[in-house]
Amino acid sequence: MEELIKRAAQDLANSSYAIALTGAGMSTESGIPDFRGPSGIWTKNPDAERRAYRSYEFFMENPKGWWVERVTGPNIFGDLAGYSPNAGHIAIGDLEKYGILKTVITQNIDGLHEKGGTKNLLEYHGCALKLRCVSCLSRMRREEIDLELLLKEDRLPPVCSVCGGVIKTDTVGFGEPIPEDVAEKSLEEAWKCDLMLICGTSAVVYPFANLPRIARQKKANYEIYIDPSEGKRPTGKTTVIEINAEPTPLTQEGISDYLIQGRIGEILPKIAAEVMRIRQI
Image 1: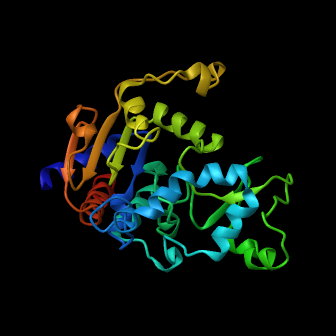
Image 2: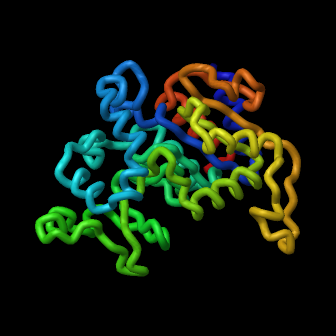
């Protein structure tokens, strides 16, 4: 493993545009349960999973009823604000701080990357600590809107102060499109990176799982995602590095160049420290 850690650090140090993709494996090391693992939220509560599959459709049909359920019902995630970033989040924040990582794209909805110092963050499936206007995509912190007061005054659903559109939680439900701004920026980042560091994702949830394939194969259509007048073209092969507890389809299909198998919170700080040594930061 130590040789792979040194190899990853050297690859990162030599990169010109490295990005990171992260998934539930990072959050579980902070104590946040996943959905389908042995102690997952849906494993323990299958009814919650069934409701989740219906949630976005219900919102579109009856946003007021959807919000009444949200405000009066239990929060299946618990108090996410009470969790802290682990050493892996901090290492990723440090790699961005010193210019090694340009962007982090995460599946996680817990806000821990932001707490860990990451600034240039794309929350692919949204954030449970935020709300989003479904019309103009304006986002705000949950505490900026008094949902309890709106319930009491029979003024649910909340509406956007920018455009008057209906507001929902920022988290992306089943059947809900990935917000356009995040989807387009993620594709652009995957297209132009020369190194992708993948941490703690099983790579089976789409369209997120397409991003490593786009990065590796450079098959993104730049006429759609990038203004061709800028003269940008895909250049060379992207190095794809996995850090995961177990092999994934990316490992098995040869999408990743190599897998560092183990705990992210132990491996990432070692990689970050070695990168700093190589770059003399």
